[in-house]
Image (cartoon, rainbow, N blue to C red; front, top):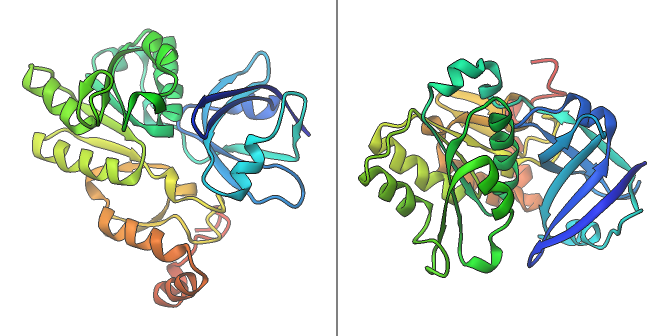
Length: 291
């Protein structure tokens, strides 16, 4: 059992929890995710890791209520326990492969949208620990649903934006990025994490600007082990699975229109059967260990 030590309502329908999970915390790196289950009857929910404390054995998760199971999660209190937490899963950010000296030479801009702010925070905090502070654009539709602003401002040069202009730069994250570019900012890499539609338009802009871009396709995951086929992607001309091959990929190689259409189909039983028949042997990736 995994005991909950903190519960915080960050914004309407968005919650943060600190959970005791020593083995996960000990091995976690930014960019990875885990799978939680409220109880033995509960559904498996994949969540990217927002933070971890290796000494205390604690992990931090942030989630949005989007259905019955996440609603059940939101009702958990301090002292309650998750039945299962499996992780860390997936591959860490490739930034973890660079030395601090190499990172200091990079000009990086993160773009965080919605609950995608949580996994961005994990990477920004890790970079700060390496002595590197980078730019970050954080966006939301309106001020009321912006999360973790104080925490993000400590670990990055933070630029806030809202679609309705209620806070920060008026406009979406693409407007903010274009504004920084027009002011003379230049980047070697953009890392965008958030809703798929946001990542799609960020990639369209960065392709025009000539900035290599990484996106996290965690939004497509269901099972988390490669077996269900939900997170199947075509990256360039290769079939990949976000949960075992990612979750981060070259955003300029992803066909977002196809990915979004596939997500819509996967929501219905008829759609899943159609995809399974259409994709044949490439529909799922097995256990992720036997490609």
